[in-house]
Image 1: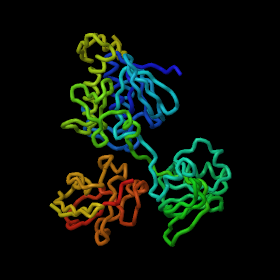
Image 2: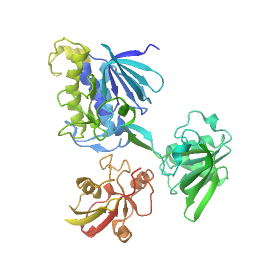
Image 3: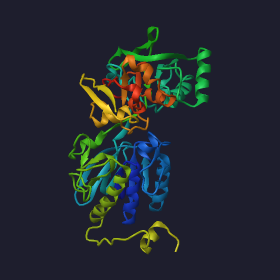
Image 4: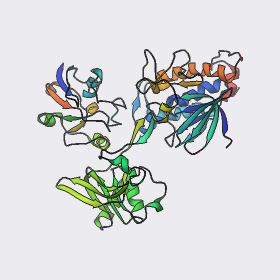
Length: 341
Length: 106
């Protein structure tokens, strides 16, 4: 399959990946960003969108989401391509051309340069602490639901207290044979309307709701038959053919570990001139890299992006002279940014 | 300064002189206590600084607020004495506090 082309493929659309688009764009490089989340912002958007940040230069205080919104506006003139909800699964070097990057949907992107701006790694569903759960994953234990119809007629146990757990409880109740919702406490962190609708279904006897934790899985060959739920007054065994745990997301290094790059404690060592990894043409910026004196700050990531862009330019346009310019005064930079004359 | 003790899962005890106003998580990180990850850096946004407060201290330390309770849903093996250490601020009354790190975070 013929893939798309870009100068720079950026893994991770957090603040540092986004700002890299700006620095690369000023040097006329096109960018394609891939992120496992369904929107830009990385940790800032996923973990703490409403939290204030006090050390972004020029902003005495700005919320994490506010900063992401500003960055999106700042990079808009460069029209980056985004692949959200996607993960980079493979990366191979092509002689004289750069890299061929494979995404988990089968898409391929050819890039001259790859920039890893993946922060703490890619967000993955958190595995609940139930012994032996690995053996059932992908068959009877599902962390995401692609087709509701596949769950028709099943005895479902849904675990969690957020919007995902509540929404799937409501949506799957008419489809499943029986839905049991399990949460460790009676309060939920979900839309009040969903909670009310769930309670109504519980009161009418259309679903079961148990306050407790799933502690044991029964079944063979990856096929689940029952789960044990520990409640305040003892344990109950409930028939279950599909278990759907919604315990939020955690960060894992993921496929980056398989690309032959040197790693140090799950971070990628780089030099501090180019922020290049052990492989020429692959750079790492932001929280995912490490070097003497490294500070895991957004502002450090911004600096790294600026220097990386200079080095990337030498690979994308070899031999071309790079003229150092200020956005304040350069008419050619103004043109790129769409500043009116 | 207030004396607090953070006990790692393997039993290693970290006796720390903590500044009032700092959080138990910050003290754990400063002293490289294994098992306190604090992925989000103390924003009460990740549940990776989960600790168990020793029984005799739970009343004095107090209950988690609603936001912390929400985050604890994501923690590993939550018990009635579970707290996120980034939400426990050190103060005079906590002199002698003992918290234990769970087997793992999330």
